[in-house]
Image (cartoon, rainbow, N blue to C red; front, side, top):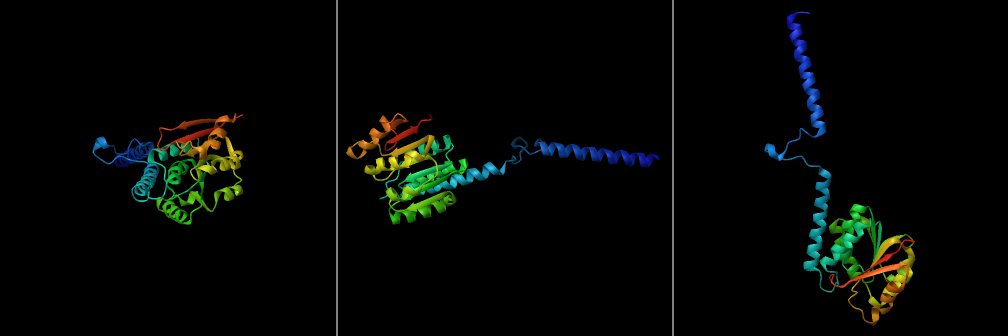
Length: 238
């Protein structure tokens, strides 16, 4: 082999080794630019997209709180955060809500459901509020995981057959005991019943309060310093 050919072979092999080494570094992530190098750091697009979707939902919730509260009987934002926390903490797959209103509390639930892969079934008796809720679910980008049932929930909930991870009660207070009696069998062991406005411990709520505090299969804590008052009931595992 001539000297020129030897030199050409050495150059070719050196280039090939360098190319393979650079590919390995690039695939490992070590070669991605960092902020220390004065360049834009590499970012995984999945968390970025998720954060963007969450911010969109939070923006809609802020707008609803500022501009749609009149006549809607919405939960307070701190209550909404608790609803989201509970749903995500237990990995809720199916949440049933009685009292959609304009969808405010439902959208808080959806912040969790979009990460747990779950769905919301929400019931509203008022046609005007139901229509507004549908619009809000759509603009928050969560309508694909929400089923809104319009009508008298005392009747419509009898059609439910699937297990329930969280039952959220935020409708007629005198009706809480009826909703509980009809849906408790569907709440899974380890599931929750979350009742709103429990600071109102008048005669309308007495039957419900007695039911969730005397049933040996339930464990209840009333959070009266939390927003407008929430009763959180655990259906015990046996």
